[in-house]
Amino acid sequence: MTLDTFDSADDLYLARGEEVNPHRPLFTGDVFADLVIPGVIEDGMAMIVAHPCTFRAGAVLADRVLVARVVPHSKQGPGSWRTGFYDRMPLPDVSGTGQWVGNLDLVGRAVVTDLDATTRIACLSAFGVNMLQQRLTFHLTRAKIPTETFEEAFSHTFEEAELLEEWTDALVGGGWTITDATTAFEHFLRSESPTWQERLKEAQLRSAVRRACRGEAARLLRNE
Amino acid sequence: MSDTLAQQGTTPTAGLVATVAVPEPVTKTIEERAKSLAEHAGHIRNTTSLIGDDAAAMQLEAFRIQLDERTAKLAKQAPSELLAELSELGFAWRDLARMLGVSVPALRRWRGGELPSGENRRLVAQLLAFTQIIRDDHLVFEPASWMEVRIVGDAPLTPIDLYAAGQLEVIHDLAAEKITPEAALDAADPDWRNRYRSEWEVATGEDGERFVRPKTRR
Image 1 (cartoon, rainbow over the protein chains, first blue to last red):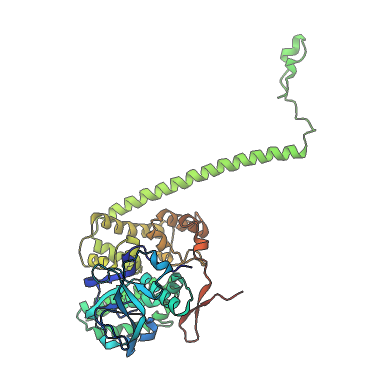
Image 2 (spheres, one colour):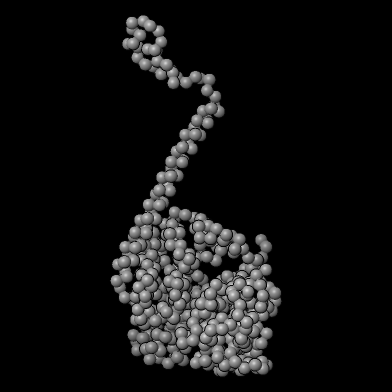
């Protein structure tokens, strides 16, 4: 019995360090430099382990979100994570070089307003998020679910986050505030019937949603 | 073969007798005739197969030449313009990054005007050229959508996955309907049936949200 693993550290991350886009919405797997976790004594880095549907309803965030403490770990090759350390999510080189892990036993509900975009140091890739969900599920229930199944089930949430990031980049670049940009995105995403948000759940419709979203952002900027 | 009558006998007119083929003995069995037909048919099939293989190789060579030619032309454009065209097709930035073998932040920088390396510039042009070929020559409607959909329902592999793995010719043959979807996956990953066998499936709950459950028996 083996879990899925990565080939190289780059497979796990969407962005690290200065490459993290402050306009990217909070998402599962985000790593923060310094975060208080109620009930967890250790200080330091933390990562969001909650599913996005549990802490965000569109642009509206819940008061608290489930996070796990990120701690140093002995260096392990990618293969080690297939057959061991099931209570940890590997985060190689998440902060400079070195091995770190999200400790899935050191968890608590952090205050969302403490999740400051300026202290976010890493965002996981879609594969990284799926690997985190696989390990968390296995650690809590001993149910082994392939990362491909998580991808099929929840990739639409990743799509939505990417669209919001791109939309915010465009509108803020055109002088909008982040709040106004986010509000406009929510309004657009829930327009039409079926809504654009619903259409994101179907793979063959996603490209049409992206084109419509990009077109609408451009239209809003032209109308300024 | 049968002897001619001219070779039989010694009369002066013997040489004037026209050659007449002697028909096959009527006693040739049906089984022998079937065997002869089977050998002839087998020969035709082997020849046809060889011709088919040659045609396939020629078609792929033509595709490679066409792709290189179009890539060279597109590479003259600014990379930011090429990426804008790919964006207009509807691709996700993370999928573009995967197909190009780079990070999403790298794509963001190129979109902002930073110049990629020469090889990366060529790869961006090649990706756009490829989508144009499958759209224009093989009538793939909305190539970004087509490339995002599973090739075979049971396996989570899409043309985007194959492109990221360098399997451009397999995708081309799939778009040209020269191979079946299963054959395309066989070419890309012979073990796909075992690798993606799963006891889990995705369903939609009463709240309208997706969840994962054990596969229901049918």
